[in-house]
Length: 116
Image (cartoon, rainbow, N blue to C red; front, side):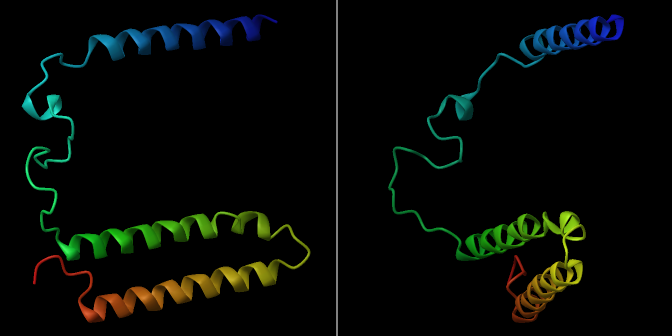
């Protein structure tokens, strides 16, 4: 019982300390960018038809694709406890090989070059 009380005391004290620090630490001097309705750097009063860099969106889509790869590989540690662990390893290897070939293709085509 003494261990439970000490854990509750430590977690409560840590929560109170972190809450106080989070309200005390940040600077309370907002600038023009923070007061604007959009913090993305675009002027909300100007034209809505500003040109965007297509290369930026291609790199962003590639990042999302390879970030999704992690979600596909998350069940892999539990796959070795199934009745056919070789099948789950084969599927995971196929996903990795396919994504590696896609990365090599994008690299060869210059899709990962930021500047031309």
